[in-house]
Amino acid sequence: MTPLNQKKALNRFQKNKLIQSALKVRKSAYCPYSRYAVGAAILTSSGKIYSGCNVENSSYGLSICAERNAIFNAVACGEKKIAALCVATKSPKPCGACRQVIMEFASHGCPILLVDVSLKDPFSNVLETTAAHLLPWAFVFNQRK
Image (cartoon, rainbow, N blue to C red; front, side):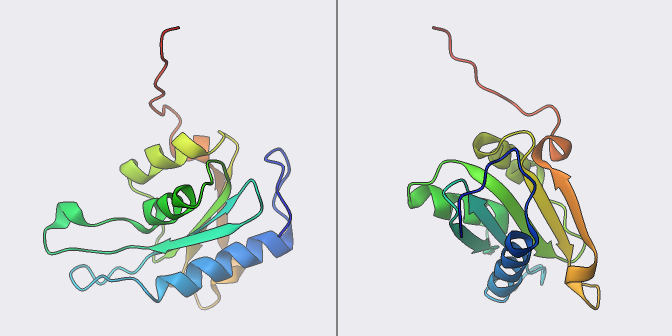
């Protein structure tokens, strides 16, 4: 995939690729306690896609959400800028921790695609929003110079 200028909207190919990646990785979710499988895929500014699924643990605090899993996967590979993100699950809404992590690596206008898998055709009704809309008052650490 070609790099994405964050000021441009996602094209149809990029949207479909992100949605397909999120739906595919969702099948790998480890969620024996909640039975709530989530898949996430991010497009980085370099044009690469990284994915992640939720992984639960019997000690709930040790679980990780799909969105953070995908972002941390990208960061581990040297990526630091999210150009777009897709979340696929039933009634997709990133949690507060994921929203803050998204804002750490994404611009305010970063496209966010929310795919509801409970629909017959998840591609037919994708909610498109932005990172700033998910977390309008994100915490930002300002170091003193």
